[in-house]
Length: 135
Image (cartoon, rainbow, N blue to C red; front, top):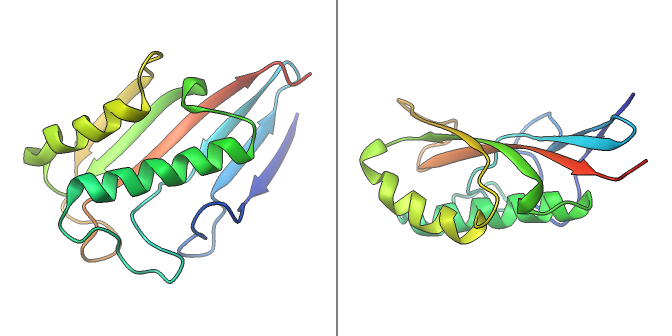
């Protein structure tokens, strides 16, 4: 088993001292664990303001770029965890999320938190994916 860490230039850089992706080579497949993604641009500014749909789309576009860099797609996602600042806005989030997670629906946890790590962020999403056939 080999573990490598990645910060591909196709997605926003981490906001602190961590890696965006841990890749665990299990022989017949690889496990991808993505750090929580939030709507922050490369300069650390919140994208989308109070528009939860815009923040959600930015987050899922970032996740898609991280997955693609490791040869994966949203079809490889097996678990998604979402942290929201306001659960009353769940329908707004779900409407955008459905555009990315269409056929294969992963396990999922969504919770409301009192705040996220940067003022103005409305959500943070982390993903686990399994990519078959790498051996």
